[in-house]
Image 1 (cartoon, one colour):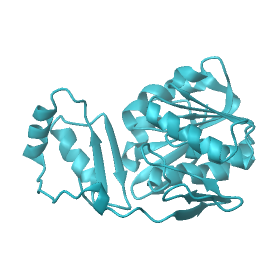
Image 2 (cartoon, helix red, strand yellow; image 1 turned 90 degrees about the horizontal axis):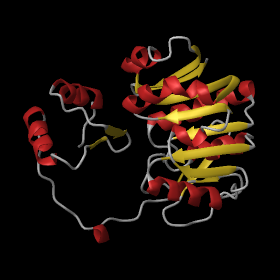
Image 3 (tube, rainbow, N blue to C red; image 1 turned 120 degrees about the vertical axis):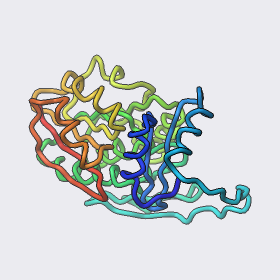
Image 4 (cartoon, rainbow, N blue to C red; image 1 turned 45 degrees about the vertical axis):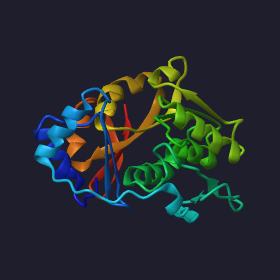
Amino acid sequence: MRTTDPEEVLARIKKAGLSPPHRRYLSGEGLLVLGYPAENLDETLRGLSRVLSFEEVEETGLAETPLPEPERFSVGPLRFFVPAEDETPAPGEIYLRSTLSFGSGRHPTTRLCLRLLTELFPEVAPETVFDLGCGSGILALSAARLGAQRVLAADIDPRAVGEARHNVEKNELSGRILVVRGSLDAAALARFDLVLANLTIGTLSALLPEIPGVLRPGGAVIVSGISTGQRGEILSTVPRAEVLREETEEGWLALALRF
């Protein structure tokens, strides 16, 4: 749905008892994407119609939609190239195809994670990094480009895994980044200097208390996917965590924590 105030929409949905298990706000397009299980979808839509107003829009075929233009953007020392088709990036750029999964760099939470990653990297100097919920692999790729020698990237969505593997191969980083399908269990037998977790509030609340178990002593975690109003809620799940840094953008929040 199109909105300029996603927090207000989500608050109304939550009040009606219809909070989605998955949500994403595409600030550049002003689109709020809600993900619900297929079961009882008709009932869910009826409930949403009682708290939100809808209008019918004209459907357009894919053939009438022009291909997007190639996009370039930078975060600190990192330079990204998002192709329209399969163009070749310039030397030093990170190639990033993001068609099916989260992680194009357009969402504030991704940019926040990238900013904290570039700020924290010299201090933590991580050799090993775990990107939990990697999407397109943008954070894993960035960690490797900044100097991490071994990076594990995991996602439960097989489409995201395929896309992340494609991006790793295109950036010639297959020797340093391993992409697997899974969640926190993918790191059960390893320990990392840094964990990156850009997730939804529900998933993050469930997994964050377990993340110290995959960190080396003195390791850190960068988390996002949460609004500024959810800061207290997420920190309450890890009361012993030290906040090293935090960044905000458009009502979204990212935190760098040490346990």
